[in-house]
Length: 135
Image (cartoon, rainbow, N blue to C red; front, side, top):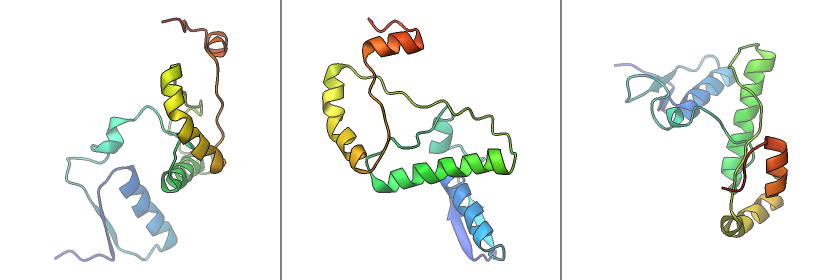
């Protein structure tokens, strides 16, 4: 029988990051990660490999997780010089007026948690992104 101090279920970004940080905090811990799929990152992690959000959350837990994740990615790239191929370009949600009205409570909550965001007009997007916004 295999024995361990900590068993992490799931080899996605959360599970692997958890195992990594446990080993950093206590190198003597015997940490084992188990995954039901054939390889790491095959669950939810693998469904969105193109981007991540830092601050666009309305729950304090998700906000904290997002911020700490980005700090970790920066640490890997900048301090440990591991090239993740990441580009720090931002995140854009496009909404029509109706959707924007329904998003206002979430924006208000984000304001209360000091989340920085900017609202752009159609004209701003056309100017900055050189896109047709009259679709």
